[in-house]
Image (cartoon, rainbow, N blue to C red):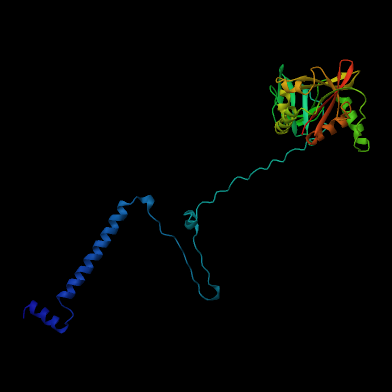
Length: 317
């Protein structure tokens, strides 16, 4: 019996071990070989840097209650699986330095020629300051031209500047720094009481209280002044007048738009000495009338015009 016959005889003993079975085995073996070749080809094509490296995990089990494990987490951490942590810079909160009302006098070569102070906190209003022979109008936090000084507070007789980290006082032109400081200190010592308005004496009068067009215009302009105080200097210029070293009043002159100034009955060169019965020569009374300006419905301004006093009346509501 030749070899083929012997093999056939052996196949006859196992019916399942036939050509169909061998064909299936050959197909499986060839498929595995092809998959292996395809995988090897894929890893050859993909660049080395893009390949996912296997995690190096080392686990040791000693068994029992003393079982412990150790894992090499260096590789895991380096993958940044949950993103990279970036510490945000801490926000620095700047605390505003408190500003005293009485600070040393400035040595800057600037002049304060006019002010409009609004409110008790002195953070509103406007100031006319001359620097480098030029006048300009400034509000709080403006930098004075030609200097590094910043306007921080506005009072009726002075302003506070911040210059190179310190606060300094710039007095209204014509007012002595030391005398004004003494007067303020004396006022603080007195018992706080609202000053009584002076009784009006016989004076010449200019009554504009029934001029409806003027009332409407003044009301509109007052609202504009409250929003932007520097606008008042478009209509009126105010400067202090001193006699024998003391404040005598405030000289009034029209601004670049003189129409409203003339309509009120005021004249260029008038010196205001009272507003609604408050004496403008008294700094405390002057500050009081400025605070009440917002609520006034009528204004009575007593001015010195030549050798006589004139009371100018006009409505605000």
